[in-house]
Length: 396
Image (cartoon, rainbow, N blue to C red; front, side, top):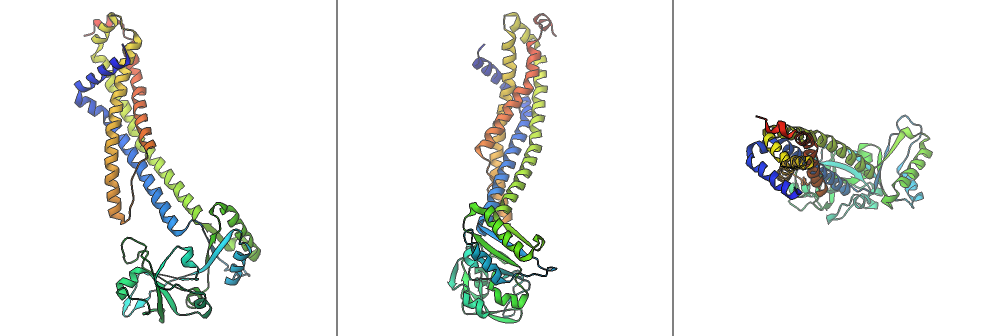
């Protein structure tokens, strides 16, 4: 008997017992669909995180100074000198001052606006575009000017799109708006990326306290280790102790986040794959029942000269077909659920999150489903092939 003949006979047996076959395939269907959705979700999260970090700039280093308790300090000029001395690796630098409090426009309080004191280079570092007016300038830093650049949300929500030249108050002081940033998010909303305010770091440090962090860009992202090493070496010379500063990079943070996502997806996919094993046990159980039901048939075929390997081939192929059909149905359901999950995640998060499994993941899930069918179909097939034809013919 050829493999094609065995395949044709297997399909006939499967079709003749539709309900039983469907229930047998259920574990495989659930397992394959779950693995595809989970892997797709992992890919979507990884891309979402990667795009988010790319927007922040993967070529940036963040230096946080914690000099409290140290007899040494690092002022802004010293930090600029460090960057200049290591110009082979480092490029732009911006001191940053995070400000707590709520700016006011007239009688309105901006409760969710993020405020930062930055240098004139910060907008280039953060890839922010000034759409109206101008950005901050070196002269603003030198004279500690009371000027600011705002996000598109504040411009539209409080100034009707004509904010340049208008004023707002920060900590009771009046600041003149000299520029408006281009819209970053798809929609303008309170507390979003466009609800922001930037003022000169010199002015911010006078109001809110000293500069405690710096954002530095690298000349080449591929020289991350060298850039971090030269920066840490220079800071160690200042403080003589690495407990008073930290140097972190967006690339390292992205790598850490991606690694965590991959571990989580791997664990969840492993749990979902248990359904495949359960499905395989179901296939083995049904195939054993099928062997019992077809004992006389097996006896007749063996008495007519059918070899053991043909009997075994028949039952293994039937188990593999059952599992493969379950895998195909699982793939189709998994793709449908992935699309639905993408739409649901986008609506709930307000941002695009595409749940999209790779072709390799789909192929692997299908291959595993077929492999499980063959593996769990082997024992019933061996039992069928080993039946004594005389005993099989007398089986009632």
